[in-house]
Amino acid sequence: MSRIAVIGAGAWGTGLAIVLGRGGRHQVRLWAHEKEVRDSILARHENELFLPGLSIPPTILPTGSLQEALESAEIVVSVMPSQHCRSLFQQMFPYLKPEILFVSATKGLEEDTLLRMTEVAAQVIQLRCGFAPRIGALSGPSFAKEVARGDPTAITVASKDSALADTVQREFSDSRFRIYTNDDVVGVELGGALKNIIAIAAGVCDGLGLGHNSIAALITRGLAEITRLAVACGGRQETMAGLAGLGDLVLTCTGGLSRNRSVGVELGRGRKLPDIIAGMHGAVAEGVFTTQAAVGLARAHGVEMPITEQMDAILHRAKPPAEAIHDLMTRSVKSEIRS
Image (cartoon, rainbow, N blue to C red; front, side, top):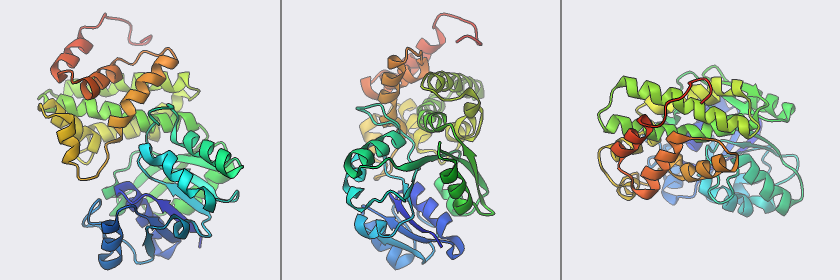
């Protein structure tokens, strides 16, 4: 059995730990920042804070110690919120070794540096540990609740290290969780990060009472601007038609379990962002943090992203959602293929 450390016990981290621990396939240690999460898992085999109602195998050991979580780990899966990625890897560095395989399952961008999560992890490990890590990115259409209860799910692991991708595919896959491989790390990570912004916009449309026409147009044009930025950053267009692109975008824009879409719904109904976040009880909608970074990354590469720019105005400059939709619809007309 492989020894796997999952760093981050939110809904997605817990869901992945459940997959990895099913049937006693692996020794899994789940690092949880919140004491109530650790206590809940130990006492009742359930993450009552972030993933209530789903049973956690007794083989999964929760811990609040990074040293304990990482001891003898062969694979480290990082599932912390994007804004905590750098800090946690800095805390982890004394316990990291060159032979460890790293898998980033966080979907976001670092606000200050505009870096993807594998870039943040690699930068910290290279600087603090003195070696270049073997690393990949895990992304695709996957609500944690559905993954945890065993609904058939297919996602992608992307890495330039084909041996790492093959190992993750073999070790993580089972009859209910299928892993595909890809070597387009840029495309897979940006697809996973940027779709959250479009999902907030989809929620805004719903909150405003708009219908299916509006959502279909938003998803299609959202995919177009995600693809433009991904390609400008070195990703491939075909990746955006796959699980980490279109698949994840459709899920997050239309599914009732999407936290990002739910934030957008409340914004469309007129609620203020701080009040919405306060009511999420510690859960994270990554799109809120990713939007500003995406605007900065688009400007750095000279890429036009009108939906993302309007979402940034709604989220961070209190622009009325109805006004943002109007501004999108009254932009100068142009060719679909070239825009």
